[in-house]
Amino acid sequence: MKKLTLAAILAISTSTAFAGFNGNTSSAKGGFQQGATSPISVKQALSAKDNSIVTLVGNITQQIDDDEYLFNDGTARIKIEIKNRVWNGLNVGPEDKIRITGKLDNEAFEKAEVEVFSVEKAN
Figure 1 (cartoon, rainbow, N blue to C red):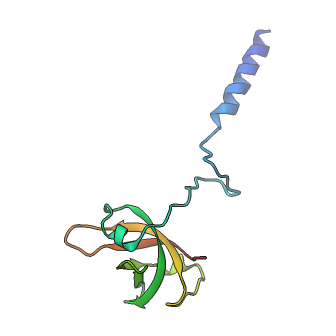
Figure 2 (cartoon, rainbow, N blue to C red):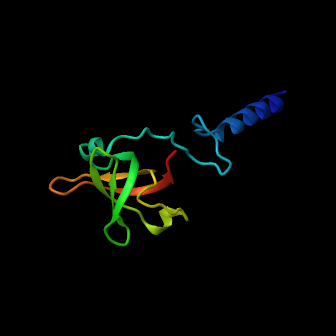
Figure 3 (spheres, rainbow, N blue to C red):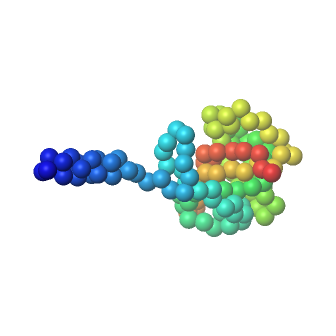
């Protein structure tokens, strides 16, 4: 009887030991998925804290150099950096409205900019 009770306790503790955070969504590949962040305006982003994660919706109006662009949503402009791997084959022009998510670099005495993690066409 002791062996059966010990086996049952071991089975229960083993099954709960492998449980993990699942959030509100699941992924076929596994891992953490953060819920979609609501977009803010560029004007709001310009006054947000350094290293904030921001989502912006607007247009790229100009390419500055290889991976830096000017982004405008009608409230203000901000410089954004999009590495080639982030594009993931997506082609956009100035007329295309896009949604970007990235980390805000808003240090004192420097103009704010966003290091973009994801870019997609907005609906």
